[in-house]
Amino acid sequence: MIKTVTILGANGTMGRNISAIFASFGQAKVFLACRTKEKAEKAVENAYNSIRSESILCNLIPITYDEIEYAIKESDLILEVLMEDLEIKKNMYKKIIPYIKDNAIIASGTSGLSIKELSKEFKDKAQNFFGIHMFNPPYNLTLCELIIHDSKQENLAQQLADYLSNNLKRTVIKVKDKPAFLSNRIGFFFINESLKLANENIDEGGIDYIDAILGCFTGRNMPPLTTADFVGLDISKAIIDYVYENTNDIFRNSFEMPSYVNKLIENGKIGKKANMGLFYQNDDTKLNYVYDIKMDTYRPKNNYEFYFSNEMIKNIKIGKYEEAIQTLIEDESHEAIICKTMILKYIIYSLYITDDIAYDINACDDAMVTGFSWLPPIAWINILGEKNKIVELSEKYLDKKWVEIIKNKKFFEKIPAKSKYDYRHFLKAKY
Image (cartoon, rainbow, N blue to C red; front, side, top):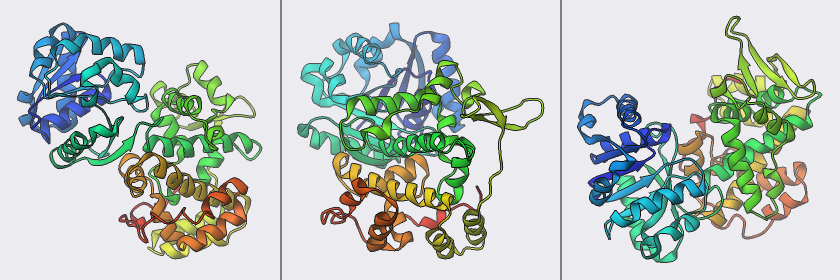
């Protein structure tokens, strides 16, 4: 039973929000460890504000890194959520190792670094080390990827998964120690493919043009490039580059960041948190602007409308979801073909990579629903007309690499006949 938890790096957005989850749902005593007392106390305040439950305040204890000895000695679980830097993380591990209880669980909240590599610092306690990757804000996004780096961890992993699921009310998927794990691997595959498409379609408008083609009516809360800007182009780049540098499969080039994004990042235009990235809003006029790749400057954002998307939105609005999808399937405009191509790639890549990374093919649907709030891959198969239709559309719109994957007899073997998620919840009647 996990009664006491220490969060290392609790002053970050993820750290303080996770602290609140452990203190509220888990009813655990939580030490929020930061560099200074002021930061730790602020972390407690922010953790409380994320839940706004008076009952958790007595469970949240601010401490500095100089005080972690007594906290670590008491803790049943130690979760590190420091910045994504191997050396920074390892240096912290060296400080806490002498005080860790024999049966304590140690974990990193990294969004993609190798758990096996991080575990090496713990030597005889390495099998007690896991990745616990939650999504922000965790109160709304319940996904928790439990990363296992050794087959000998199976029993402890199941106990931890049960705790995360039953006590913390997380949607737990167990995954292997592969670059970016599962949800980010799928999500940022789609995002970077969209970034590349914007560059390929600069004459049509680029960034806002692609976002209009892949808008909320295609099953997401916000379009993919708006998502990248919201997450932060610097964070998006870190995840995408890490996959590119640490994989060598047939999809490696999908994680090659376009040069225009690198240029924006170099100039400090890293997204919404910097008030400028792929998009920005003028504070005085409240007009929305977008970065024009071709002109290398910002211009007013266009409100693109296409026949297929207008018809889809019209039908979604009145609950005619099948008619909406049929419109997409039948439309042969340039924009509709881009939309269909991206959806097919999303489905195939998701299932292909899930088979490699996760222990259950259904994990791709859990990952994309509870981590990204996207219409999940298996549900897309259901809505497009089942497996034979996916093969037919792939042969029509995708190149040889994709068709060879989907025509492999084993590709559909593990895929259930129906997703547990209702696709109607994700299709929005707006761009």
